Amino acid sequence: MQLEVGGTKFEIHLGTQQLLAVERDQEKIAVEIKTFFSPSPLTDYHAALGQFLNYRLALEISVQLLFSI
Image (cartoon, rainbow, N blue to C red; front, top):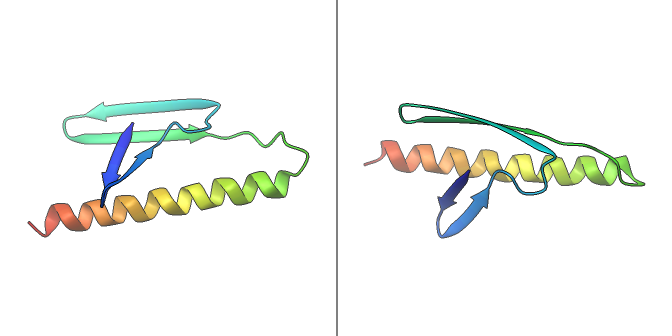
C-alpha cells in the first residue's frame, strides 16, 4: 500500500514480516506485523516507533489535505 504526501512516498509494507490489508469503498486498512529479532530489540523498537510516527503524520496530513478542499 502506498501513500504520497508532499512528494514523499510511504510504503506500508517496508520491512514487514506480514501485512494484512483490507479495502472497503474508499477506506483502506493496513496492519503491519513486526518482529524484533536483531541482537538489540531496543534498536528494533526504535525503528518501528519511528516508522509508525512517520506513517501517522503522513496520514494526518493526507486527511487535512482531503478535507481542506
